[in-house]
Amino acid sequence: FSQTKKAAATEGTQTASSIAKQAAAYYLEQGSLGTVDKTCATYAGTLNTTNTNFTYECSGSKTAFAVKAIGKTTNDNTNGVTVTFTGNLTDGTFSKPVVTGI
Image 1: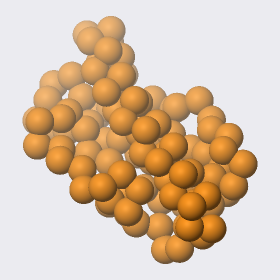
Image 2 (image 1 turned 180 degrees about the horizontal axis):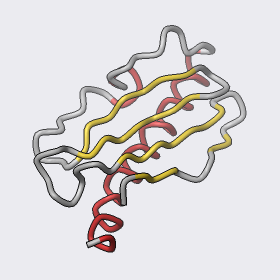
Image 3 (image 1 turned 180 degrees about the vertical axis):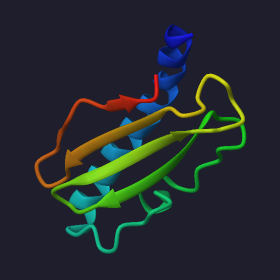
């Protein structure tokens, strides 16, 4: 069961990473992060999570930006799984994703 949850967490990891990198590009283009958009839409557009297994939230600041992928409770493989991807948008460095709930 744990292996299945690990595999399911890949979706959350990849999308959270993509959102964080888009936020870094946004920061470079705008010169400012402004008020962090909790929905992540400012950086990644409106996310259609209807057919995904995770929802996404953005938080933090330009030097400690975080994207959290939260497993949907309606899916046995993602229920309780959270992926947190953090980075420093000013220099483009990102930490290894932290996956919990597997």
